[in-house]
Length: 125
Image 1: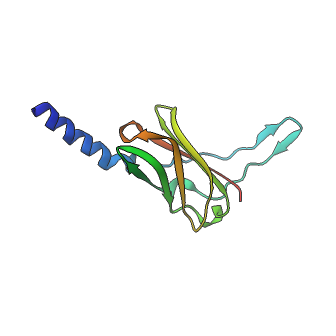
Image 2 (image 1 turned 30 degrees about the vertical axis):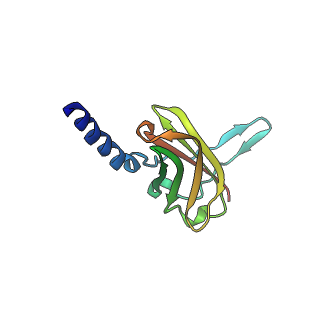
Image 3 (image 1 turned 120 degrees about the horizontal axis):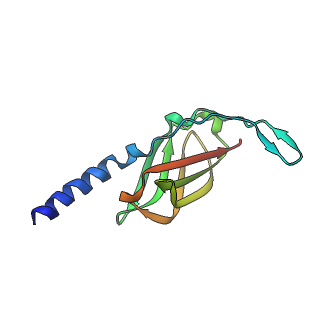
């Protein structure tokens, strides 16, 4: 009985801290080579300040809710991938960024305790 109580306390702590685990990582922008030439890769803004939350149903993440997206990304196409140790668990998008926010439905739904990172990509505007 005591083990079950401790397991519930640990699980509650994991669920309470889960949105904080989905921090955006800063990446550097570099040109990429194409078959017939090169093209510069430009960023719409710094995504390190994006706030990540989850819509949860029956212990699974059904959507990623992103806010505080730079206004220069408005109109861009955003995709999100939920991962654990680099392995994709579920993904969604593209959705259009509007008013500095986006909600991305995730398929398949992912168990809340499995998510360690959320990878976000914005293409455009």
